[in-house]
Amino acid sequence: MRIFLLFFIAIPLLEMLLLFEVAGYIGGLWTVGLVVLTAVVGIQILKRQGLQTLLRARKRLETGELPAREIVEGMLIAAAGALLLTPGFITDTLGFVFLTPHLRGPIAVWLIGRGIWAVQVKRPEGFQTHSKQGRGDAGNVYEGEYSHKTPESERLDDSADR
Image (cartoon, rainbow, N blue to C red; front, side, top):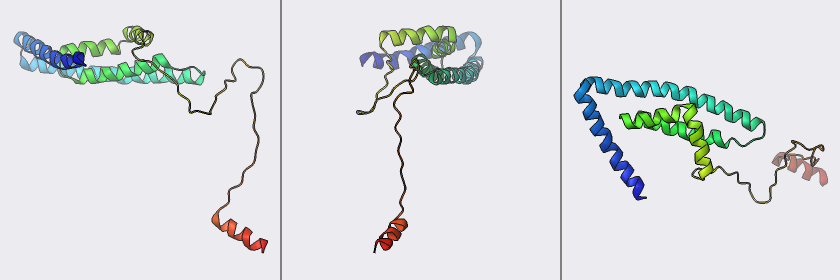
C-alpha cells in the first residue's frame, strides 16, 4: 500500500521537474505542444491496437480457448490510454511501451506467469460445461417440450373444466 502512495507522490513530482527542465531548453509553449502531440498520437495508436487485440481475443474465443493474454493486453492498453492522457514525459514513455505490441506481449506473458494478473473462469455451482472438441460423440442431448400459459389461457382452461 505504501508503494502506491509513493508512486502517486513521486511520479507527479518527477514529471513536473522533467517538464520544467524541458521547458527551460525548448520553451514553455513548445513543451505543452509536445505533451499534447504525444497524447494525440498515442490515442490514435491506442484505437488501432485496442481493436486488433479485441479481434484476436474474439478469434481465440471462437476456437474455444480462453484469451488470457489478450485480456491482460487489453488491461495494459487501457492503462496506456490513461498514461498518455496524463501530462508528462515519463507517463507518455510508459504508455508508449504498453502500446508497442512487441513489448506489450512479453509484459502480458510475464504478468500472467508471475500471477500478478490471474485470469480465472468461475462457474456457478451445479453447472458443468462440456467441450465437444476432440470427442467422437455429440455429448448429452436433452429433449423436452414446454408451453407458455398466460393468465387469459388459464381462465379459458378453468371454464372448460366446469
